[in-house]
Image 1: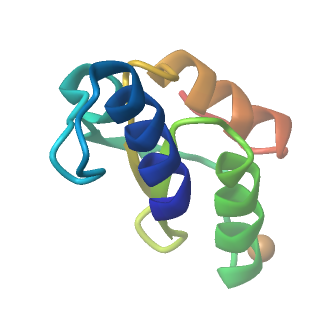
Image 2: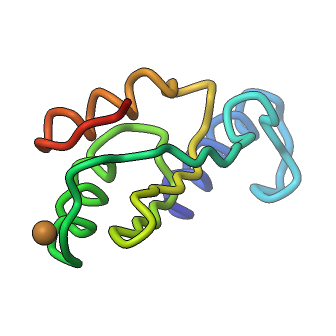
Length: 99
Ligand SMILES: [Cu+2]
C-alpha cells in the first residue's frame, strides 16, 4: 500500500518536476473514511476472516475489522475508489447479509 502510494506520488512528482516523493499529496484519491456496517450471519471468527478477506479484494479498502458477536464490520476505505454499496456487495458475495 505504502509502496503503491509512493509510486503514484513519484509519477505525480515527475510530472510536476518536484523532487521529493513525500511532498506531493492527492487528498481526493487518498482521503479515507470509516464506515460501520451491520452484518447478519456471522457466527465465528472464521466468518470475520471470510468477510475481511472478501473486502480486502475491493480496491480502495484500507482496513477491515469484523465483530461476529456484535454483528458489525468496520471498514476504512477511500470513497474516491469504492463506495458503501460496493462494500456491502462484497460482504453479500461472501455469503452474509447486510440489511
Ligand atoms: Cu463462522
